[in-house]
Image 1 (cartoon, rainbow, N blue to C red):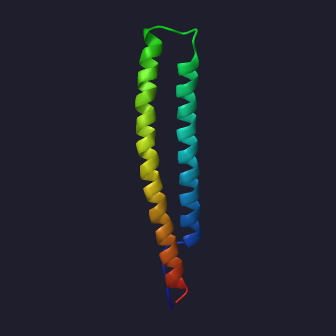
Image 2: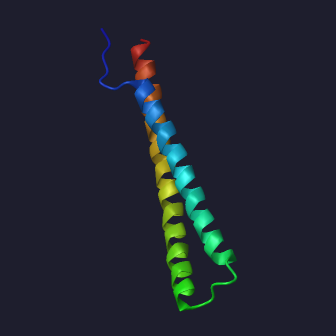
Image 3: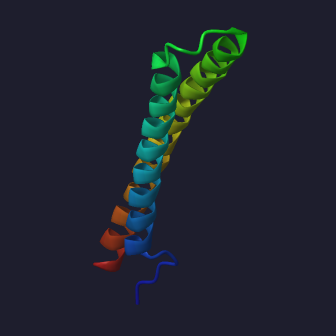
Length: 88
């Protein structure tokens, strides 16, 4: 009898959750960057420092988003292989 020690549905659910959270984080950081940048009444060194930190964070989040995408593809591949194995 075929056995696997993963739940394909759980792996798919995890991949979907990770992808959705990654998109949301990316969007939220983008909103913060835009909000600070568009605030014309605040013009000092602290704003510049915050813009720099947010730009760095935005870049890091972009890289993280790409890494999460790769992990999601891997989880989906594992789920597919598990389903294939279970159907034999």
